[in-house]
Amino acid sequence: MQRKRPRPPRVWGILCLLLALSLSVQVRDAFRVPAEVRLLPGQEFALDLGRFLTLVDVSSSGWLVQADTGLPIIRAADAGGAQVQVRFLGVLPLRTVQVMVVPRLAVVPGGQAIGVMVSSRGLVISQTMQLVDVDGVTRFPARDAGLRPGDILVEMAGTPLYTVDQVHALVERFGRRGEPLEVVVARNGVLLTRTIVPVPVEVEEGGERAVRYRLGLRLESPAAGIGTLTFYDPTTMRFAGLGHMITDGSRNPIEVNEGRIVEAIIRGVQQGARGFPGEKIGVFDGQAGDLGTIEKNSRFGIYGHLERLPRWGLYDEPVPVALAHEVRPGPAEMLTVIDGRQVERFAVRIVQVQPHRRADGRGLVVEVTDERLLDRTRGIVQGMSGSPILQDGKLVGAVTHVFVNDPTRGYGILAEWMAYEAEIMPEVPDAGQESVGGGRS
Image (cartoon, rainbow, N blue to C red; front, side, top):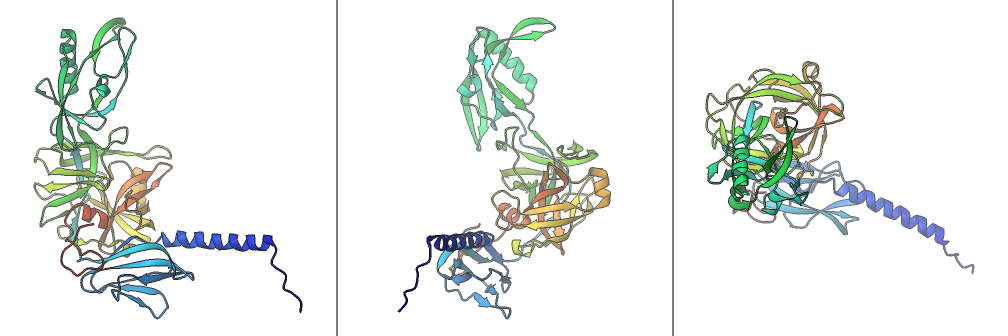
């Protein structure tokens, strides 16, 4: 009897390589499935996982069924939650998906231009710097005193601060006396008192050398600039805007201390170009008083409470907020202001939807297709952040960032995430439990 020859090592190596490549592809496909899926009561969510991936109902909810096409379908019940796993060959778990039933939420889309003030008083510390004193010694007075970028300098020597000129005068006065300065900064909602010693440095004034006192701080106005209101809830009067965090020049989050929003008027637009983002040019209009107060500056935008209903919008009644799985590539419209106060509609196209990209607020890729908007702005410009995006009568997202090398395109955040962050989404049950309460996502 002839013995079967063993396969040569090269063949085994090729087979192992093919298996590894197949597994890596399956892992990639598995992680394209969102980690969280929210459905309306009775709504279905289909997944095309390919040949080697399967779904397993690990919570035994009975929500997982098979469609006539053979695809697995998650069919939500009237209430509750479930947990399913994506597995390789039905054995190796690659991803766990939390499925929750939520009620339909509706909000009023905005699009209005707003002026954003992160503080009613104080100055934003955008940077702490080194100084070389009159003796040639390198000093870090602000850093050594415990001040950080993103802090708001609200008081100095018992004096409330509103302008940089106030700071210069106080630093010069205490420095010449040789006295330390007591300052108060706002950080994470807490007022902190610190002591800082002004440092004498040589500067050039009018062609002559002079000694002046400095703290090693770079300060900015608390006005964060022009942005866009995304939506509001007329029942609770809660609002959302921008779609991204307000940061300083070093991308540090800015502390919101008595922050507020006011109406803004767009006077012009600086067009965008490849490598150079454009910008809305606007002015704050506080004649009608504050539009609202900012309570939270998060990675998903600014959130707070309206003092009155916004004007100049296109919607007076709420529209449904689309859940992430309802958003699709294709035509949509963006609401924003490019002249004066009035909100206008502009055609855009959703190029890509990434519902699993929650953490960085870049769940959408959007392209401007409206010829009038392209002629006026060349695409997405600064100040459009927060401009609501609607598709099929639902609010699906908001513009957040422009592509620096292609101003016709930009990122957007899914409206579903902004609705949760605004804290107007009702509580949803935990996966695998009955509808008896639970935590908000």
